[in-house]
Amino acid sequence: TTGDQSFQGATNLGADTTLTGGTMDFGSNVNGAFLLDINGNADFGGAVGNSTALTSIDVSGTTNFNGADVTTTGTQTYHGASTLAAVTTLSTTDSQVRFNGTLNGGFDLNVNAGSSGVRFEDVVGGTTPIGNLDVNGSGASFFNADVTAASIDLPEGLGVGTGPRTITTTG
Image 1 (cartoon, one colour):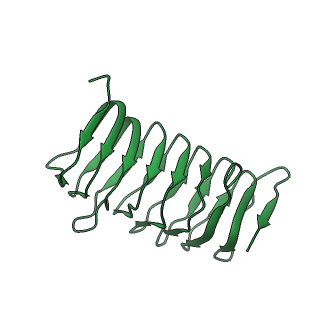
Image 2 (cartoon, rainbow, N blue to C red):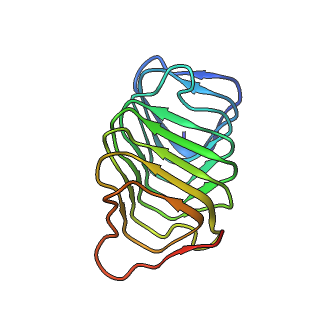
Image 3 (cartoon, rainbow, N blue to C red):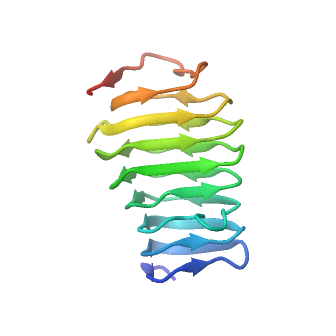
């Protein structure tokens, strides 16, 4: 399909799943111990992996977190611009969480990466400052662009990347 796809009821993955199209709109929970690969945009209105964690998630386009916490046993990668439309928690067992695009939205973001880390490759809070940013993980985490948030709680050893970076707290 090249158009938008809507999944308004609970979605249970029975195998590794690749969805291709415009925007994949998940109005409810998504569960299943499998990979979810979205070639397009994602709009998560329900929890992802709340009863059975996904193995990993990869979104090639934009991602809207509309009240959706995401839990995986493996990596989480968000390639396009991401928007927090509600307080959001992203959790992995021991794998990296990576934002390759911008991250905006006036809500809190909690990221739990176990023994791994978190990478922010583009501007965080550049258009709309995010709320409180809480990063937990014992692996290497990096900001590779400017960050604006109400407050920032980071583990020791967070890298700031190369070149000048501005980290601003507004709270």
